[in-house]
Image (cartoon, rainbow, N blue to C red; front, side, top):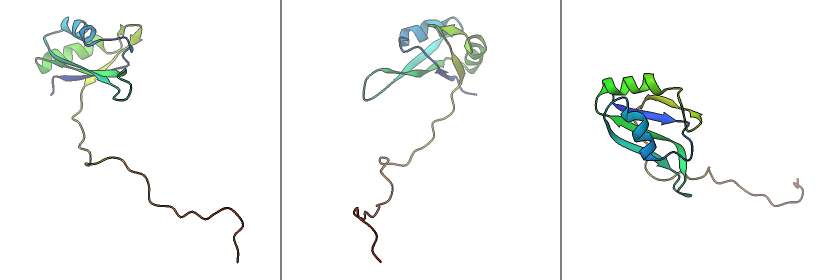
Length: 106
């Protein structure tokens, strides 16, 4: 079992210090990471908290999942491993032919 937790439904005003404080009551927090939008620099409403042991992580899940923090009910669960993504960017679909306006001619 992992000691890294996913924390969702965060208020956009929540800071990493707020996460640290909320989870510290349930064990030793080794890391907090609040996800930010690359384009705007604003919080995305979720983050990750790493506890020092899997037992402390489980205790934090039981204590904080569904609890209201900053006026929002948190979603807290054990973080799943990150899925590998193919290298490179997204890219569009295939090339489409363009037929000008007008009618089809037979």
